[in-house]
Length: 339
Image 1 (tube, helix red, strand yellow):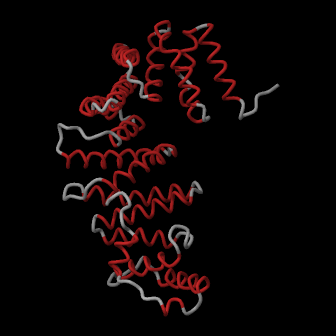
Image 2 (cartoon, helix red, strand yellow; image 1 turned 60 degrees about the vertical axis):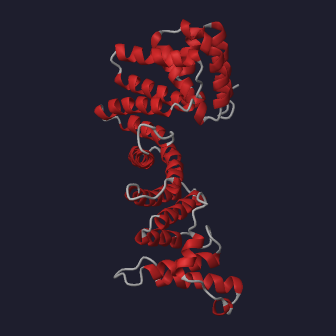
Image 3 (cartoon, one colour; image 1 turned 120 degrees about the horizontal axis):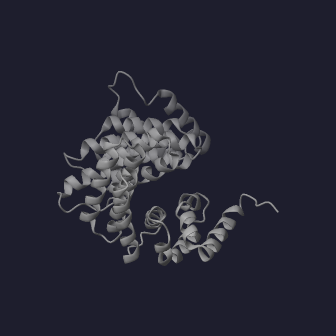
């Protein structure tokens, strides 16, 4: 009987388990190459459980297979036990000896990842910087994108000032995002997009971080476009609102207008309730009242009014006292991650 797509991952797991028992070296070779398949098929937990059993058997595999196995296992599990950290160290030595620069960069990054899981952020950043140097020298965009993503989610290096560390978190997320977009790696764009959103809303606004945060606001609109193309309209709406919030917290009025215009061009009421979205459009329009070319068009406002009248009656707007534009922006664009 032929395996169906839904049953195939389970059968693959059974094959790996059987092979580990019968021929551990072959099982480690196969298992170490199937981590991404397990992730994409939704069987990562089963894969990790099998590979956990394989750790004591790794010595039976060839140095190449052992290196690939430990790198895949470390990234999937954040296991910082001695056998795993020793395996990663051996992998780095193996790849260095065989002049496999990509493998060496991956091994250094894995060492950083494990160090970060133990809150050894200084060590993690040292390993990430070494890996990043290799990937930059080799113009390896994927290697740079993943390593910068790791840096963006890692605690601040205590050798740096807090301001410098926060700036790096934003700049690393920005570069990772841009490279994943260029690579057309949808999974990477989504993953780093969530990291960029969080960092842009939590990194304190200072003279040093403000330019990078303003750029982050712009890139969040690109994230919204990416989500929109994938028909993930809820994620697109959240990215637009995050862009507006980041622009507001940095005092970037032009950025606020651009983000609110993007919200206004989305299906009405899909993100905010109709009245709040109408008020937000009016507040943004006030910000650009002297601009030669307006992004908040009269048609947007007219459409918003029409929806409100249909929903609440024609007298609703005339009886409602609209708050000042500044108070609207402070309320609707309040950062949920700040007290």
